[in-house]
Image (cartoon, rainbow, N blue to C red; front, side, top):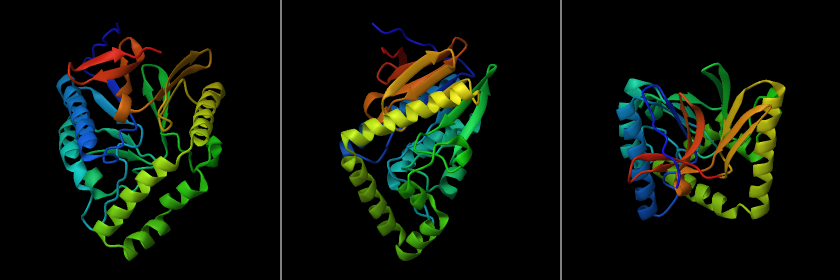
Length: 262
């Protein structure tokens, strides 16, 4: 049986790959309920939450319109963010941010962010690549196109809000279905190897990523690499407490963080 990890005031929760809005209405509702219970737990314990990409399966806001499925979740995040802003490292599915997320109180970052916990440098990156060549982890060409502000402007000029959001929803779901086993394996290897290079280079003591949906907890002489896996299917995430970092599974029905069996 897995041990339960108790959180206290000031602890940190890391979550990624929720992909809210990417599934059937029934599955979306179940994911949303699990996430809201997690947010409420963070509010009750006064913990900080850090999202490491792909909170949404598709996210676009312009002309005062955004996907309706985000409303309930954003309301709960707004309550949490009044205690302490949630750092949101956007991923390849939710990088078209706008005023609604700012109004909700998120601290938004589209690249990577290094924070300090205890005496450790913790580098956070979603895992779909970075635009800064200094990191040696370039984004795929298509991802760079989607994040290009000129492309976004043209897209939003041509399509009205509801049509644009519908196109993004269809494209996002289709892109996930097209991903081959070989591509997923290649991305997993690329992310994991890059994270280890960052540790060996001394840029970070701890690397935390997402994107490839496979939980990793790799502690070595170079440092600690965590991949958060995915919240949408497996409810895996990481926590930082007085005892250090743990890879855990959120048990929403009992409101417990259970040590992930690796």
